[in-house]
Length: 101
Image (tube, rainbow, N blue to C red):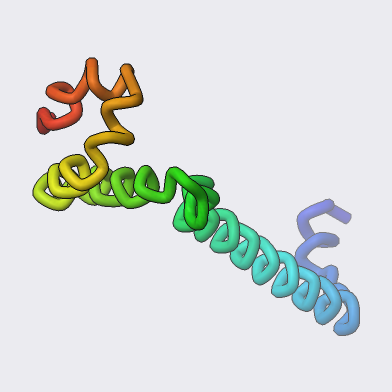
């Protein structure tokens, strides 16, 4: 008897097929859930921890800068000019921040 004849004639039991399919569905569902959960964490950035602190203005500046809204960014920079002036790295690189690539 050839091995191919044996394998083609083999039929697993119904319960084994059912259990394998159930575990496959559970595994795929859990994997998709965890992938989407991981991807959604990128929406909840760590900078949200700035809200409710003395440097809450920095959160809004980051948000407007990252969204590309330079008009809103410049407006926030004018409003919070005193706090921004106290940050030497921001003062040195102000022109670079406003350049669009």
